Image (cartoon, rainbow, N blue to C red; front, side):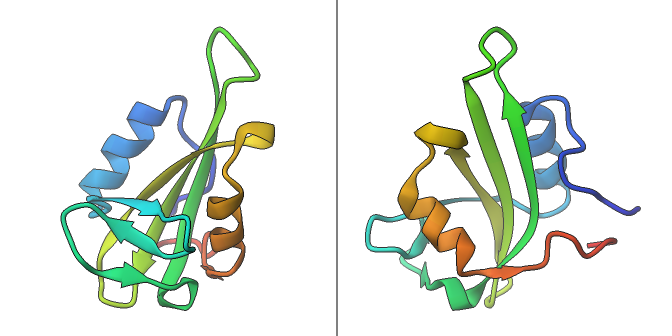
Amino acid sequence: MKRVNNNYETMVEAIEDLKSRGYTHNFNVEPNGVLSEGKSSRKYLPSSVELHELHRFEGATNPSDMSILYAVGTDTGEKGTVVDAFGVDGSETVSKFMNHVAQKQFEMGK
């Protein structure tokens, strides 16, 4: 089945579907600009990460309550998600990191 960006109504729906497709790690971008996951000591530079999908959401009661969900894969085969605020409240660290990863999110059929 082909996937497109922004094809979910809620973040919960997106996370559940992504988990069912193997995106099981909850990644964070650290202040020093590396991707990490709490359960593992592995750290990933942007050159070791691919962005597969991204999904943006607006809060149901407050349109300024926006978030973005990134589905990423690493060069070690791990797949997971990164959640960030979107817009003026977004993390500059996450934004800079994502701007330097391989952008695969527009390739269909992943």
